[in-house]
Each structure stands twice: as structure tokens, then as C-alpha cells.
Length: 194
Image (tube, rainbow, N blue to C red; front, side):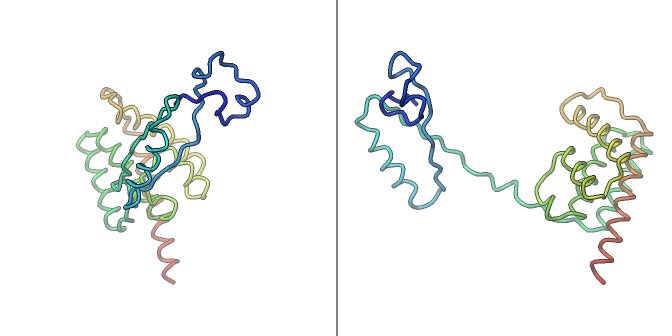
């Protein structure tokens, strides 16, 4: 948006603008956000009329529809988590280590959401899952370190590095961490029932 020097709202421009010509000032005025609704067309029409006859102002309206698809995720049952852990074990037995790694991360997020539903109600990055669970005392420091290494493997694989090697020992450590978290989940749920 081009703003004439004498109408610029920034203090530095009011006193002395460094631009030689008024139309060179490219500071942006604070914008206003509109929520889509019945009054939105009237608001935009009113705003458009204000700028219609002004040659030294430029009005630009950007519209971004909010996504409803990234809403809250439900907490899955303990049975689903156990089924996922069994699937990871079968994938390792079949030699499908990359698939086992990705399924392990999905299971990790499901367990994290079950342990801390308010903190993880939306999709999470691997790094945030690790840090929040570690700060909450759900992960030991050595488990968090192992998961950080596995997060790097996961990220390389998920972003197209298809030749990444996934060591079986690392997957077994991951399954051990997942089983440990699943046991904590069982204990925390049994405590909340009593």
C-alpha cells in the first residue's frame, strides 16, 4: 500500500520520512480482519467507497477462508493403541521398517493425545510431542533423546528422502518407549476412574 508522507501513521514518517518522494513510503497501515458473516459485504463496500476517489491510496483486500478440517482430534481407545502397537511389531517382522517408523509416530501421537488430551487436541509436530511429554515427566531424558533422533529419521522419510535407512534397533527402542507410555496411560486412566 502506498501512503503519502503527510498521511503516514508511523512516527518516523511524521517527523522526517527518509523517502525523497511521498509515494515512495511503503509502510503498511494496520489492517482490519473481518469475520465472514452477513455484515461482511457491507463492511467491504464501505471500505471500498472510502478509497474510491483517492488516487494516492491503494486498497487491497485479501481473503482467506478458514479451514475447518484441522479441528480437534478425538482421543483413541486403549484397544486401538494396542492394535497399532501390534501392527508396528508385524511390520518390523515383515521387514517394513519405514512403514513401521511412520506407524510408530502415529501411535506416539495417539498415546500423547490420550495422556494429555487438552495439550494435544490438534495435530502435533514430532518435536512438540517430545518436548511437551518430556516437560510433563512422561518421557525420561534418554527416551526424549532417542525420540529426537527418530524424529530426524521420520522427517527425512516423510519429506521424500526415500533411501533413508531405519535401523531395527532404533525401532525396537521406539516400541519400548511406546509400550512404556501405554502402560502409563493404563495407570493414569485407572487412577482417574477411582
